[in-house]
Image 1 (cartoon, rainbow, N blue to C red):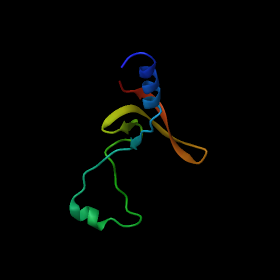
Image 2: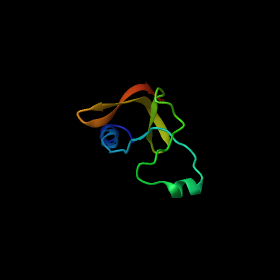
Image 3: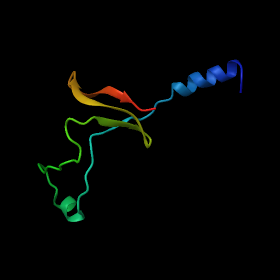
Amino acid sequence: MTGPEAGGLTERITRLPVRVKVVLGSTTLMLHQVAQLQRGSTVLLGQRVSEPVRAVVGRRTVFRGSVYAKTGHYAVRVEDRSE
């Protein structure tokens, strides 16, 4: 498709909503450990606090950044954009 129709399609596509997930870290637990989790339990993640978090769309990391609080909500400051 070329001409004005292509520009309209591109504009519509770029307006589509996408879900962005922020991954703080991960760990592996044995099934019995998961079964023992209760309110107040702590699960230690493999990522250090000083390491950037990953923002993921689908299965692709789109950027890395740091977590902070803004107006009572969690926020992520973009530090490195993945290409």
